[in-house]
Image (cartoon, rainbow, N blue to C red; front, side):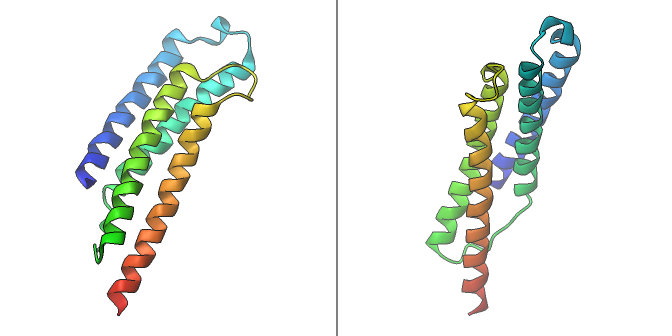
Length: 133
C-alpha cells in the first residue's frame, strides 16, 4: 500500500500543478470580486499540496508490522490519507461559498489528514513497543 500512497501523492501533485495553472490563467482576480471566495479557493489549492506531500512522505515510512493491530492501523492511516486527498480536490472544485462558514469538505479533508497522522503515531508507538520486548 506504500506504493499506492506514492502514486496517489504524485497524482495529487499533478492536480495541484493543474489547479495552479487554472488559478493563474482562468480564475483571474477580476473574475471574482468576492475576496473571501478567492481566499477560500487558494487555501483549497494549498490543501491539495499539503495532502499530496503527506501521501508522498508516508510512502517512505515502513512500520515493522509486529501484530494485527499495527497492520490494521497502518491500512486505516494510509486509506484516510488518500481519502483526505480526494476531499481536498473536491473542496477545491465546489467548496467556496465566500463566507468562510460552510466549508464542510475542506474541514473534513483537514480533519482526515490530522486523523491519519495521529493513527500513524499510534501505530508507530505500538510497533516500537512490540519490538522492544
